[in-house]
Amino acid sequence: MTREEVIDRMQPYNGEHVKGVDTDTLIGKVMCGYQGWFAAEGDGSSRGWFHYAAQQGRFEPGYCTFDLWPDMADMDEDEKYPTPFVHADGSTAFLFSPYNRKTVVRHFDWMERHGIDGVFLQRFGVAVKEPRRLNHRNVVTSNVQAGANLHGRTWAMMYDLSGLKPGAIKKWVMEDWKLLIDRMKIREDQAYLRHEGKPMVAVWGMGFSDGRKYSLEECEQLVRFLKEDPEYGGNTVMLGLPTHWRTLTRDAVADRKLHAIVRLADIVSPWMVGRYKNLGQVRTHAKTTVAADIEWCSKNGMAYLPVAFPGFSWQNLKKSRGSAAELGEIPRRGGEFLWAQGLAFAEAGAKMLYVAMFDEVDEGTAIFKCSNNPPVGKSSFLTYEGLPSDHYLWLTGKLGSLLRGEIPGNKKLPVRDTTGVSK
Image (tube, rainbow, N blue to C red):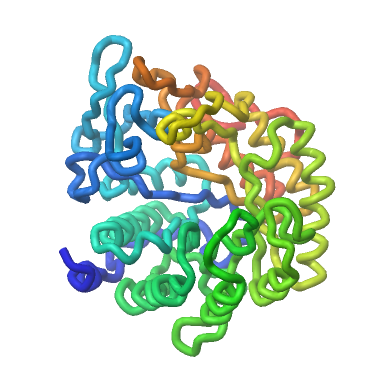
């Protein structure tokens, strides 16, 4: 399939819409990142075990890139893709693919059941050039639209600039946004998120000090395009930034031009995954960095979307690249770690929250249903330590209740009864 043929297949969502969450504001919402980058052998994407397999596509015990095994118990047979991995009883272990619409719609059903407002769908700049990768992103986008509309959730596009070369932002990201507007008409989707009267679009990856090839000048051009272009602009723009964007230190470039670019946008969302590892560090980070960030944004007429994460682990990913890492490097503590972040950020003044991520099993940050009975063998996997597989879905939903003042901000986790109904 050529790139032109892939583009010709891009179509607007024209299915049913169920009214649910308020899609006109980000305030009071808990949103998740939705990677949607997985593919499975036999799912129709022709990508094999993408984001599951190790380098060179090797996928078998001892060769994989994720530390949490998705819970497949709810899936129908046509959503289960058999793998070379086996459980302790010798049975085949299965995985999912977001290329399968039924599965993505099911994910949004889980969000609705647990009060999660919606997702920022990741769209990678490096993935929109090659036809097969572009087709995969477009299919997943269409599936997310279906899930959000059928379950009364909301969604918005988030571009990830990671890996782009100089000149690629204009050539691929800006042109891709035009395609999404012209072909898929995403801003006309009733489930698409708006804020302050304008459609939302997020851009992740500006101002990091990790040697990215694209320049701040290119980033400014992109923000101005999304804000000012007479046909494709007029958006509320959120920027995914380094944790220390305000002080221009550590993970941020020491260039004040970054602040000038930030002021062009509407919402700041610093990346915090891995920046603290225990409850004490969470509280310190909130009282110092987050509180000061919110003050800066308030003075500059901007909103602030902090990022929380349930824990972190990338042993299999690192192993696939020839290095080592501890399994469960940042422990979840049964949800206490995630809850402490939401509570501390709310106390610091946050009015919205981004949870990273819904489906990110590669780095062990997923909050969707994961198995307490993963495969056995040469690859090690984390579990939810006997907690219900929907524990983090439930807890993420409760964070939204906390933000909106619907439940008190206690340090202890909310109480959940034995039937799975929260109190």
